Length: 222
Image (tube, rainbow, N blue to C red; front, top):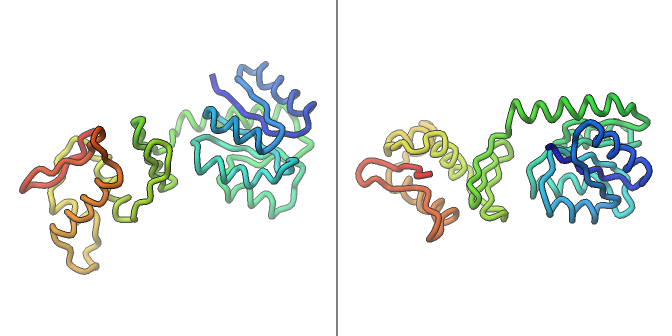
């Protein structure tokens, strides 16, 4: 069952939206402030968060940025703020839709169904194994839920390894794919340095991802 978090400080409206969602077969949870929304968002993931902009303890825009840095999921703004710059801000933060009040509950339900169907048909480009999480759409790497900073070259390396998981990638293939031919000459030593730096960031004693096949290349083990 898809679960939806409704962040709206008008209790009557919040409960009305939740009732309509429940009647449509969704699980719901209510939050009436950003603080409550943060607690709910850290507790579990939601298929969709319906978010007001004007909240008692701040703006929904700030919460949207905060939650997207920590959780996967979709956001829809539902607000009386209808200025063009507000709508653009919502979309720039990654919202799926921006609905202004007053609104039709039937159209709202249809929009939600379309968003969740799109999520099913086009799942996010994510690698996740419980320890390492890579969101290729957002260029974000996490280790046990904490952000891990990687360089652009290391990120390209991760993508290449995971796209060819289990396959041996020769030194020459990696050099050609990771560095443009117009750049300064890069040798195996530079490649080894970059691989070792990446391994130092994502591996520990219990989690090994990259194997060096001596004299041949590297292999993603997972």
